[in-house]
Length: 113
Image 1 (cartoon, rainbow, N blue to C red):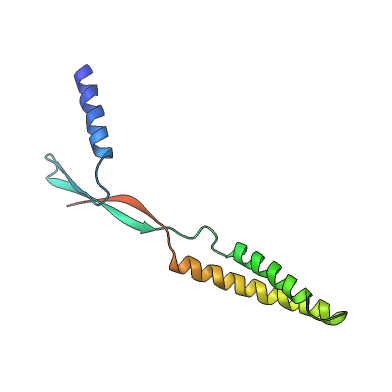
Image 2 (image 1 turned 45 degrees about the vertical axis):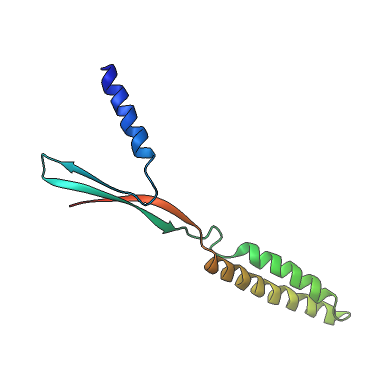
């Protein structure tokens, strides 16, 4: 019993130390099929799908810049315009950054042959 648990532990450790792009093949003599596994690279979804951070930072920056223009009602309109334009620009900047700098993780995928 003790040798069986040591063997199982060794098998688990050996399986966990496989390379990232390794291919493993396991056969099952009873069914005549074999399981083939590959480690594949998968692109992660962006954490901020709606670019809220970029929109908020852009809106604040645009509002501050707009506030420096005009007097009275003109100042109010410039501030509001700056908020809208800055929010849109910030969203587009973050959207572009996310598209050009994706993140990845690795998954083990298996199928029967």
